[in-house]
Image 1 (cartoon, one colour):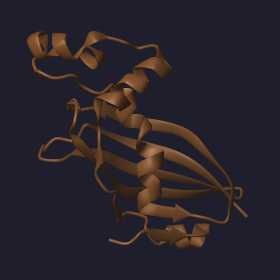
Image 2 (spheres, rainbow, N blue to C red; image 1 turned 30 degrees about the vertical axis):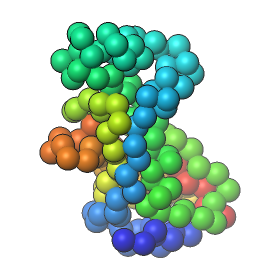
Image 3 (tube, rainbow, N blue to C red; image 1 turned 90 degrees about the vertical axis):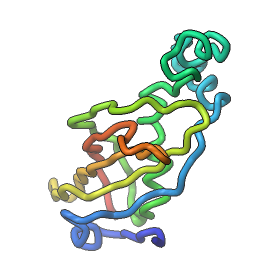
Length: 154
């Protein structure tokens, strides 16, 4: 599926209730997990201690932070849709966030998005995206959530 091109509320509106697509897969390597741990000061062993995880973790490997998986949404969403002709984009919130499955190191993940709703708030476009982070080869997504974004179109 090719990347969607959306430059206005009207162009966005045609996707309400529909799948908008899926991103490419992204491999979650230990180096990304370690960088996230450094950035967030969350060095829990289940994420960063490869040797201990091999011995003590039920997954026998390290796992990505749930919030690392969530933080990939902007990057992966940008692979699905090119929202252009905007002055500003604001991450407004999340609803119904549920971490369903851990992302084991070296897994590949991709974002799947459906446009749940679109609202015109006095010229600001409020988009509610039903998003799932799929894990390659796993029937359960890493997380599901409604991602709420505010687009200020020109």
